[in-house]
Image (cartoon, rainbow, N blue to C red; front, side, top):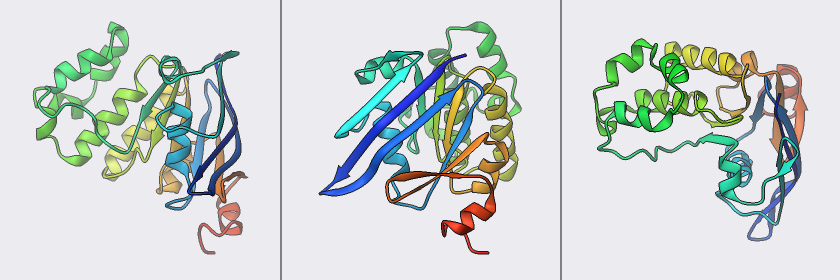
Length: 219
């Protein structure tokens, strides 16, 4: 079992505190959700953890070892951002080959009718939803110990959301997962722990009633 320890994260923009001493621990088999309104700092938190955004203060440790730079963090954490960074002219088949060194994991990934339909296409020819599905699944099935998913359900049909949800639960057997998505019902159905990000602070959430209490949804 692996353990990701995130501690004392502080981040400001133009003098405004976006993140205030964030503490988050994630272990193998955890599916930890971060719920919050637009602009609450969810993506900023993920960027800081991953190292793509600087912070005034940050402490990241994986299995007891402090990770001091982005390169070290990337060895243990995969991150499906909201944006596609795959080369547009690259074939899906070649993209998949770049992601996998383990033949067994690759075989599991390829056992999918959605992937069958697009594997000969180029990235630029995929619809937004299909590309999003491919991106999220690639990072989920990668060999990282932890995975961050930022809005993984965006642009997906209910059928594809259910497929990705099942993959998240399946892959959590081998890694810890942090997820954020505005479709909170789907998220809370699979999460083992839920947090609400407000005023730069993480608040533990147990159920929908707690989301009503913090003002995220109405009764």
